[in-house]
Image 1 (cartoon, protein in one colour):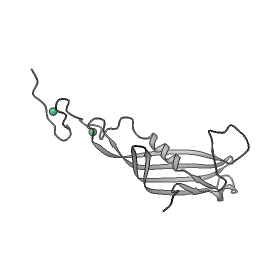
Image 2 (cartoon, helix red, strand yellow; image 1 turned 90 degrees about the vertical axis):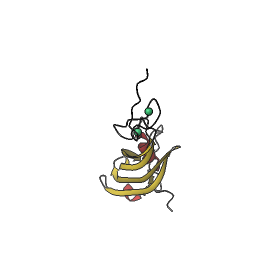
Image 3 (tube, rainbow, N blue to C red; image 1 turned 60 degrees about the vertical axis):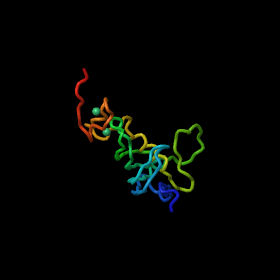
Length: 155
Ligand SMILES: [Zn+2]
Ligand SMILES: [Zn+2]
């Protein structure tokens, strides 16, 4: 059991020439994206590169997650895809760098929180199970995808 599945040892890059890179893939069966949002089949392709100021991580991630359609209220599974590039700076003594990421001294870069944050940003604001979802009947509340019907006009 790997407790840090999104951790990559990039120590070998610290003393490597600028431009040196290596590719990694991370596959994880599941992840909690948020309190009420579970993801399966997380896959990330990650390139880590030595740049002047530190180590650059470029990642393409995908996962499956189950959302609820806002029209028919049925759960459906969809794929989220996220891309990010984040620079992990080498430690230095300058201050006021709260916004920046730093490479831990042990040389292990942990991408777990970044992967989670970037995937969460891809969750649609108003998810629909399919473009032409017909939703629920405003009169009887039945799912119009499953039971297409019309009601006789009320007088
Ligand atoms: Zn729907
Ligand atoms: Zn109806």
